[in-house]
Amino acid sequence: MSVRRPLRVLVTGAAGQLGRDLLACLGGELPVGGSEAWLAAARLPVCEAVGTDLPDLDLTDRSAVRALVATLRPHVVVHGAAWTDVDGCEADPDRAFAVNGLATRHVVEAARMVGARVVYVSTDYVFDGEAEGAYTEWDPPRPRSVYGRSKLAGELELGPGDSLVRTSWVCGAHGRNMVRTVLRLLASGQPLRFVADQRGCPTFTADLAVALAWLVVDGRPGRFHLTNSGATTWHGFVAEILRQLGEDPSRVEAIASAELDPPRPAPRPANSVLDNLAWRASGLPPLPAWQDALARLLSAWRSGRVEWPEVPSPTGAPEAGTGRRG
Image (cartoon, rainbow, N blue to C red; front, side, top):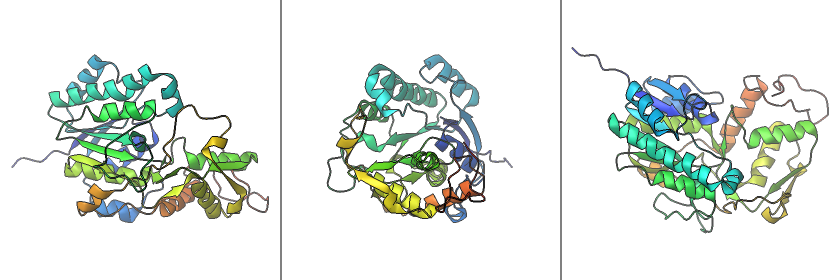
């Protein structure tokens, strides 16, 4: 009797906040800040997961990509690597399209060589932000920024058997994100001024990774929007971080995007709320509420599992268990 081998998965961008949590999920572990109940709901088998990232592999090098995939022969490639510096992309379109567009072509081509399918992670920036309601998977993309256009270029490289996942406002235990920024500002005593005219869905990598692994194992093709449940503004997001830290949420000042100093070179979508319609219509459970995911991440920080800035308590006295300085 033959023994069924584990699903072999190659993850690009493995050193990033999403890549690290995805490797944990595929390996049968709960990511830092993750939900035991959410992971149990997915019923994921343990996979044979391999990660790659710079400097080990330059995805713009077609020969190198083909050689790695031919050696590993994965069943699925989760392509999460990208150049996500929105303003950097605006200043260097050629690099943006090389990394986010052409590199995706190389990944898809290499995957086809070994019969693997691709799960590609994209962004809310493929939409113009002018819709009155949330964007579904069937709404036409209209990116306004170079970053958004370059990620859409990557989307267009996918085939009918591949999976496209769009997400937004990503936060996790291991990378640069809004939660870390707020903690740093609090620790340094700097003012908190955040825009209230950009609306989206905060998404936490510990939960997103489980949903991605679900798609990997289940083999579902097509477009999916995957975010934590609920929407807010950047101002509302920061106010909730303060509330959960025991700080006064009114400390954060609401400003308009036009008041940002210095102004941002790349346009941001005013509305980037993603409706997880395809996921929901498939009978799959919604990702947990973003406020719950935030609470879990802050709990991991307080317990010292995340090395982020130390924040004074509201009374000014140091608080025990607030983590270490990042």
